[in-house]
Length: 446
Image 1 (tube, helix red, strand yellow):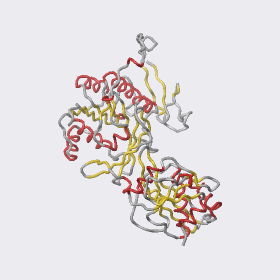
Image 2: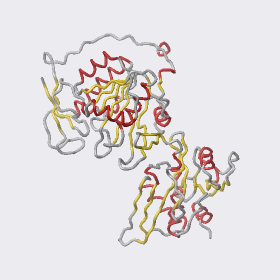
Image 3: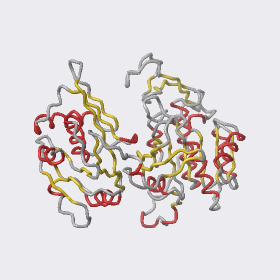
Image 4: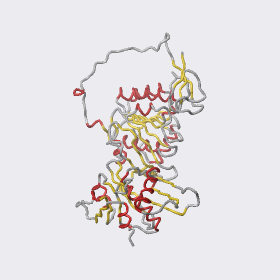
């Protein structure tokens, strides 16, 4: 028997214990990992595997199972793929277990066999939650266990269509002496569950804890093993949640699903543009149209400026990139002649969504200009465009679906780049602008 020391933060290994990890330079993160060997060497049985031509491997579109939740099906690319391993992470109390229990109930109604492995609660507690959520419990079997070998043996005997592990950080294997949730245990248990999933063609969902920095707890290897990594985002004290695909071997990673947490469980939001807009009219507010994956969304961007009392003015960004905000403030002052150096500037994307694409640049610039001049932008105006360092307004992709979404929401006018202004498929008034100065003069004219 031999051992090594592995960093719980980054997965780096060392032959002896170190107070500080040489890779990530974090203190007290090295834990011992015991390696069992037979005869001085790890025993491995070699076998000859014949390669198969890709054209001879059977393929069927029916291998994907829709969940009946449109928002989640969109994120996954159409539903769960048979034999796939999915990792779902999120903050404590965000609703991971609630969502998976609801999905289990929906799939059980279609005749699927569900095995819900719970390492954090008793079977009675799971039943209590199912009754509160109104979940159909027929076809769902609960296994309260944390030992990996017993879980896999039970799954082999039960032969489920969907297996939920809640959570991977509570599962351990007796082959390792380290504690559950350690780097070694998470990596070994994840690898064994992956092999079982692929061999038996069982769809498996691993619920994962996250660190204080928001990343999945455990080694990065776990995210490389699985077929899809989903993050459940949002504040636990707020009602709206967002599911975002960070990795997806069977679909796009640009899609998001928007949900609402209610007393009866998690429900999908059919028209999310209503969430990110308000009816109030005030200076510093503008509506932008962004695209998340294949979905256009209308988001209200708010800006507030006030004279600073510090040597260096404050710059606070919520939901948008801080460095992008600094660049846009420089462009606004230099190219449009609106002084912002003496003002604290606060910019917020409403609803807790993160708007990271550059098509909202022009909207941010006009919101800041509106706040500085204390002039209201017309409520029925939507703003779309990327801003360059020269102050020019650059074209963006997907202009037509953005405009159609705005038209559906009742907007009458759109401020867009000149090169995107030739749109005949919508009844809105399309106004093209060439640079920031022209846009400010047009929107904030008295």
